[in-house]
Length: 68
Image (cartoon, rainbow, N blue to C red; front, side):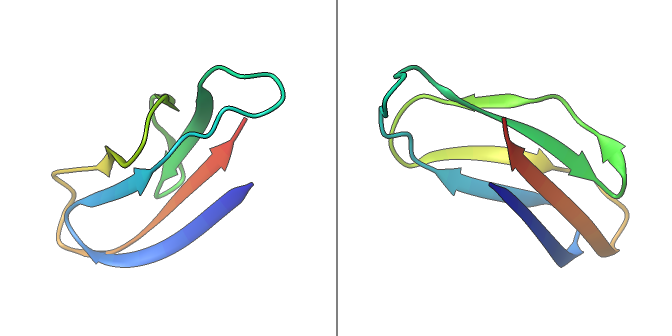
C-alpha cells in the first residue's frame, strides 16, 4: 500500500491502526518527504499518531508513505 499526499503547511501527521494479520507483528512504513527518505516507523496498536514531517518551510510539500 502506498499513499502520496500533497499538503500546504509546515507539519504532517498520520493516524494509523494495526490489525494482526496472517503473520502478526507490527506494520512497517517507509516515509519520503519532498523526495527525501525519512526514518521508517512501525505501527503496533490502535489509533497511533506518527509525525511524518515537522519544521518544514511554509508552503506546498509532498509526503509519501509506503507499507513494507
